[in-house]
Length: 291
Ligand code: FPP
Image 1 (cartoon, rainbow, N blue to C red):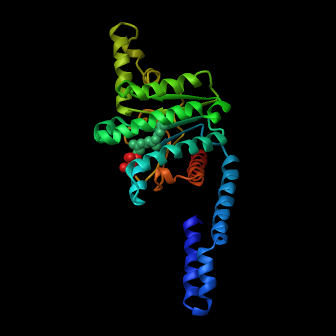
Image 2: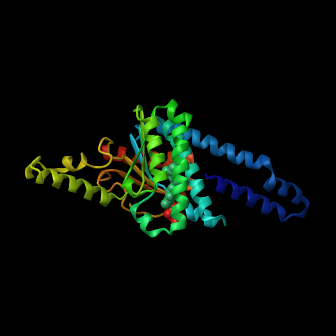
Image 3: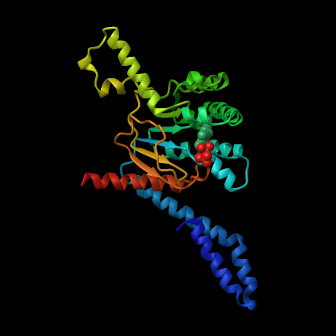
């Protein structure tokens, strides 16, 4: 039962009690009391802990990738500025990294900016997104957790198309973590799955034209080896937040056999429980295929 369901139950009990004047005071107390809400959040924590134990007893995905969608809808639904939504999205990413690391999942890949975003978003929004990537990547480069867990950070996409300040922040995060290999965190920026395949095909064509490879040698492995993230295994699980059930040009080649999980929750509201539920769903589906 979610926080809102339990909260609604308490509200309903309080409303019912309010019908009888004599008990309006205790009813108000129940609906407003810290105790009631502490009970709700305690129940939530217990539920999440139980789910954590359950998913840790099964095989966890090795590579989780996330389409972080819904920053603006999160903001607008709360009458907040658009950029506040993106800022909360950046903060959420830090939290999710921590949860994923705690589960010892080696690969985490996130979609932070698509080639379509660059063409479709207004220059003012893009500017504030670029500021956010600069700040966020520099924060990641300094993050004690990244260094204590030996997380290698890298950005993939058409990085040349990004402003200088973002490139500098990418370089900083990559250089400061280049010697690590226990975990790999990949940020897709100015990224498009089709563009990635086009770039790989161009590379194959160049080698073919230069006589380095023969026509018969061109196979899916040759393409895979030339993708931006060639050394990373394909994602086991792709999560997309905020209700849209499409892939939007994310890792098109790599997700051929990935499990897809869609949730209505906007990215800034994505909780530890939401992550665990996605993983539980992945484990359930994999178990079924195995039978
Ligand atoms: C999609 O939501 C989100 C983005 C285009 C930006 C995502 C960026 C972050 C979460 C910050 C990442 C930070 C670092 C350091 C990598 P949307 O704007 O499309 O929202 P909507 O679907 O509600 O319109």
